[in-house]
Image (tube, rainbow, N blue to C red; front, top):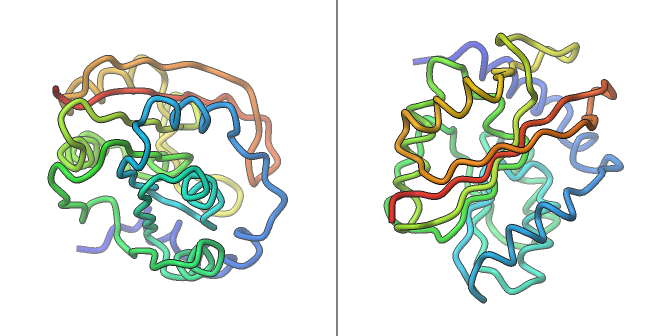
Length: 200
C-alpha cells in the first residue's frame, strides 16, 4: 500500500539526490565518535537511511562492518559511489532483519516515518539488533507532524512523545538529548538525539 507522506519525501530525494549527497554537510562528529566507542572492533552496524553515505564511510574507515541502506534508490547510488560497496534499498516499514546488528545509526532518517507508524518501525529495528544492541537516532523536535518547504514529511515529536513511543516499541535505557542546530533547509532546528538499547 502506498504511503503518501513517504512517497512525497522520496520524490524530493529522487529529484535532488546528487545535490543532496554532494552538499557541504556539518558532520555529526562527536555523536558518531561516541557511538563508535561503544561498539567492539569490527562490530556489525546498520546505517539506516544512509543518505549520501558520509557516515558509512567514516564507520568503514574505523573498521566497522557496515550495512548501508536507504529508501531512495537514487541516494543509494550516490552512497555506493562514495563507499565502494552495495547499498540496500529498503523502506523502514519493510525492515525484517533479526538479531543481525550490534548497532544501528539512524542520523536524521527516522524523522520521516509517519507518526502512526513510528512505534512499529522502532519495534522492527529493535528486532534487527542483537540483544543489548545500541541505537543512535535523531529527530527534529516539534509538537505535530508536517512538511518542510521542500515537501519532505517530518514527524516533529516532542521529547516526551518520542520517549513514550520508544517505550511502547520495547526499547530500554532511553536517553534523549536536545540541541540547537540546522539542516538542509537552512532553518534553525531543535534536535532530539536519542540513544537506546534493545532488550538484553
